[in-house]
View 1 (cartoon, one colour):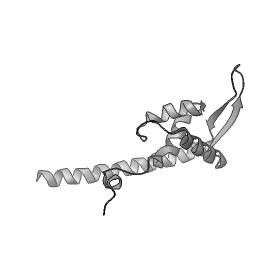
View 2 (view 1 turned 135 degrees about the vertical axis):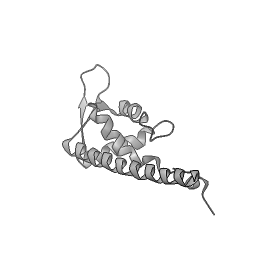
View 3 (view 1 turned 120 degrees about the vertical axis):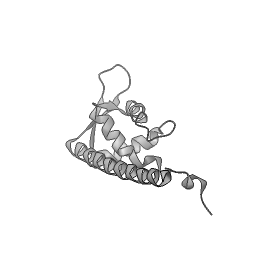
View 4 (view 1 turned 30 degrees about the vertical axis):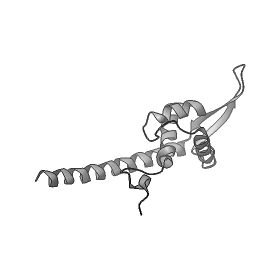
Length: 121
């Protein structure tokens, strides 16, 4: 018996590339959680809207792992906001992710090319 969701091509956990997406978003500059949610959705790894709880859970874990730092910003009259920045270790992990994705893309392209060759003849 097959699970329809897992039988769909390319299906998988939507959280798979969240860490890389957050790190990429923070490479562009310091950001608040809700800004990051909007930013990472443009990368295409999340279908629909990113659940804030999932993003904040990742941010907390990444801070524990020293990939990001946060501090409370209280300069505005409103409520204090937590602002996140990437650490040097976070940049190294992002470099790893980029290499991983490039390798994966190369293998997928090679696989698709082999199929196209086989299909054409």
